Length: 227
Image 1 (cartoon, helix red, strand yellow):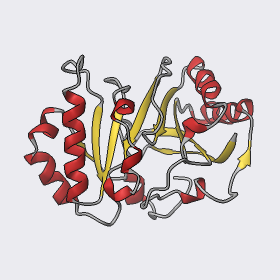
Image 2 (tube, helix red, strand yellow; image 1 turned 90 degrees about the vertical axis):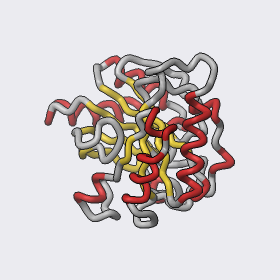
Image 3 (cartoon, helix red, strand yellow; image 1 turned 180 degrees about the horizontal axis):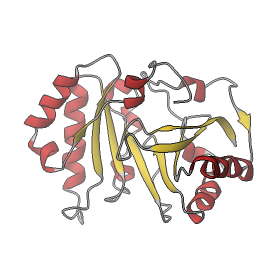
Image 4 (tube, one colour; image 1 turned 90 degrees about the horizontal axis):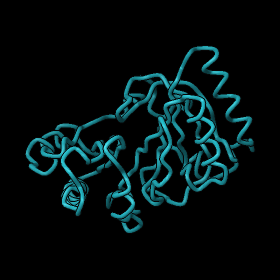
């Protein structure tokens, strides 16, 4: 597997915000988002070839050293990699709580103890909205996350429409929705605008949508790697 970096930090967003985790960032992606903040993990040769056992051993080393029990598998796009399922199985079997950050192009069918998904819905400003499929978001369950990164009003409108469609799908029961997070494209839209939109949207309010910022960009330099 192509591994860009493995490091320990805090979760910068999502349901584990502020919590210590080991990050395994794989190299390569099937999308090219306009606002991507990790292009070093998408293009070029900034990676090391590692097998599943070596990745697993390095993660175990962090737990032995510091007791960290959370792992985030990210990218790029981790689910396009051969070996990803094997790695997830080994981490699950060892009692890790695993967050899989995925870009919305791959349905989430693999269900393992301690595993949940954080799936993006790429809105218009990403340039990749045409690659999104509602049926992929529909594979998420109540312990998963759907994340909208918004850069303007059109993106907020799109997020609201997607949440409305998801919540009205046949078989969707109260409490069965994934967690919904809305965050800004860094430096392009005011936090106040997003918060006001969420507060004034019945659809987003009824489905417990949450505003978030990328906490690691507040704590450290926004361009710093390994955090």
